[in-house]
Image (cartoon, rainbow, N blue to C red; front, side, top):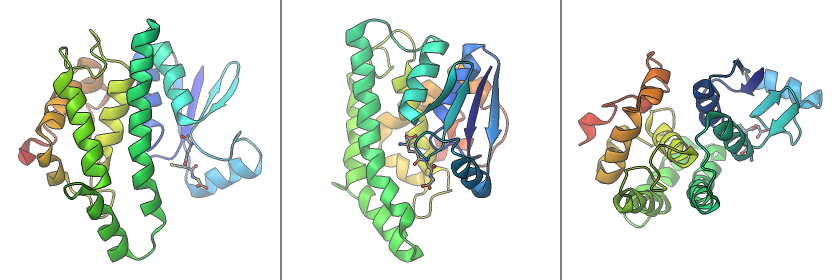
Length: 222
Ligand SMILES: N[C@@H](CCC(=O)N[C@@H](CS)C(=O)NCC(=O)O)C(=O)O
């Protein structure tokens, strides 16, 4: 039995939750609030002090990308060919790179300042604009529609899909769904991934933070 422990939102754990779900293995989704997190930290249950973790039959694993690769392998969506796997990792790392631009804005206390800092990243030439254009280029260069040019979806597709679109759910001040309309290739990618049966089934229930992963979520943004 595998147990993912994280906060309720998608954040750093969504990709692994999805991979475990499609792996067909038995797994448990444990959610904690801030006090629950502090309690685990104080008890020394978090190897490096952060969530998410996965409790596995062989011990605890931490670091979201290690969890992604592990659960992706369990789900059979981590390629075995070493070159393709490295391409997949390249895309995963590229996504981490831009995520790092966004994270410092969490600690800006003044709301107007936080909104301004985020919006500045999305104007033409801003860090997020460049990042989303990079992903758009990857989509445009793929002959299969999957980011690493594979026959089926891989952890790179899941990572980019979830990390990108979760930003636009409305839970982050200053980032609105209509901002996606500047990136038509990303919308095309959204269409492909959200209509994959595995993804569609996983998001069949209404959820205020996860509506962005459903087919047509951004259809008004076109
Ligand atoms: N490098 C870690 C970072 C995880 C991380 O930043 N987790 C946040 C929640 S989204 C956390 O545990 N924050 C608690 C804190 O900052 O004290 C990973 O990728 O798993």
